[in-house]
Amino acid sequence: MKIDEAVKILNQNKVVAIPTETVYGLAAKIDSDEALNLIFSTKNRPFFDPLIVHIESKESAKKLSLNWNDACEKLADTYWPGPLTIITKKSDQISDLITSGLETVGLRVPNHPLTLDLLKKVKTPLAAPSANPFKATSPSRYEHVVAYFPELPVLNGGDCEVGIESTIVEVKGNEIVVYRPGMISLNDIKTTLGSGWNVTYGESPAAPGQLKEHYIPSTPIISCTGLGIGEVIDYLETNESEYIENPYIWNLISTPELTARNLYSTFRSVDQGDFTSLIINIDQKFSENTKWHGILNRLEKARTLSLQKEVSSNKIVSQSKVLPSKNK
Ligand code: TXA
Ligand code: MG
Figure 1: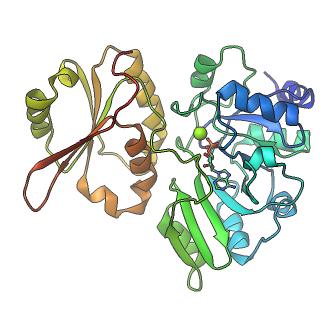
Figure 2: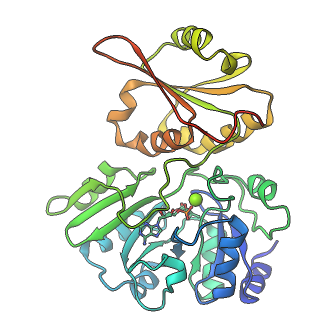
């Protein structure tokens, strides 16, 4: 599909899937309630989960914000276009349908040439959540979107460079709260802003969209921290043997950037094989490096079981989550 065709469809109050550097989005013009409603029905997304608004420039973002301050300015200048969503007080151009009734809106300039071009041509900001059914793994490739929604018009922008969703921060005066970690890390933001700004992790009091279970593939994910792979196999053989009839083992030994880029496509290719689990082996030290936090956050939400070596007792602690079904 060409950009002009995508413009036409959006102007007909319909939705189009668009490429971004993080994951594909399902886009609607912010002034079309009809198209915004289509986002929710297509994804089967509850109305309590607010949408991110995509614009082509910082200037357009400022027009949608009532409390744009120096921190927003610095963050936008440093990271846009790029994988950072800034939450600020919304102007009345942003409807309650987009923000689930919140007074704030998430804004982002995505870094993908096709979508930047599309935004310039449409001349209206685009609300876009990730282009997956509610709770499913986000699509980081064109083929993922087509597999989820065969009927949907999709602008093909190839594979997403970043691979996991944007970092979300709310700017409230001097307080910068990171609600969703991503590849722009907490430390990156601290370094960019310097002194005078308080940057912390926090749970959004008003964004129930951040669910504990999310990004879930149908093959159970077992995340293992601080164990050798032999210990993992021994433990599972004794305690959870059904998982290791035919496991796919992924040792995270690469950079966080490459791991993020391959994360969701690995979930998907394991789903397509005949594997009984995806065992992901994580270095204990990763949690000390905020560059890994986005990936660890997605794994925590997607996993069925976690195994962790307790340093003091040298015991393996297992935690399981009840997920829909182990069977495909
Ligand atoms: O990288 C991304 O952010 C991708 C691409 C398409 O831009 N989009 C994305 O959207 O991940 P979505 O809808 O899957 O996740 C956005 C999350 C929501 O679940 C919600 O929790 C949070 O952003 N959010 C949106 N507006 C908010 C607001 N006003 N306050 C707090 N959280 C908000
Ligand atoms: Mg999503």
